Length: 185
Image 1 (cartoon, rainbow, N blue to C red):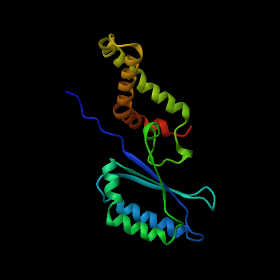
Image 2: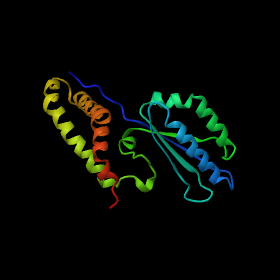
Image 3: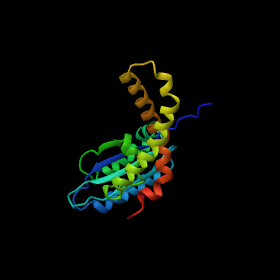
């Protein structure tokens, strides 16, 4: 029996500037919004990263279990109400970015650049996932595809390895290694 593959959580970063002299009010409203988010199904975490400079943008990082959970929050009356309140103390609309792929494998609860794992740790964690995955695929699946031309066989094998890494191996490995990945040197 094949186990169901659980997709990694959806991480979204929203960048937005507070109006001049409104930073404390903006932060207070964000914390209120986070409290309401906690009641929504699929909510995992939320945090705010203050700007590095006075004129910089805040980074609001939210994580939901699935894309559908994030969409449900976005379509909610509560979210619309919070966006209206935030508009009174912020410049323009938020600039949204969803983190996916390799970036999402290593995204901690908060994803400022200052707390991302060191590159060497991410590289080692990736290798720890790729080595056994590629070994198993090459051992069990490659012999079955020996009749295919080299490039087609390579495309199928690397596609299978990439799928297994993205949806099975790396989400679990990153979760298991999180204390080591995020530990300060």
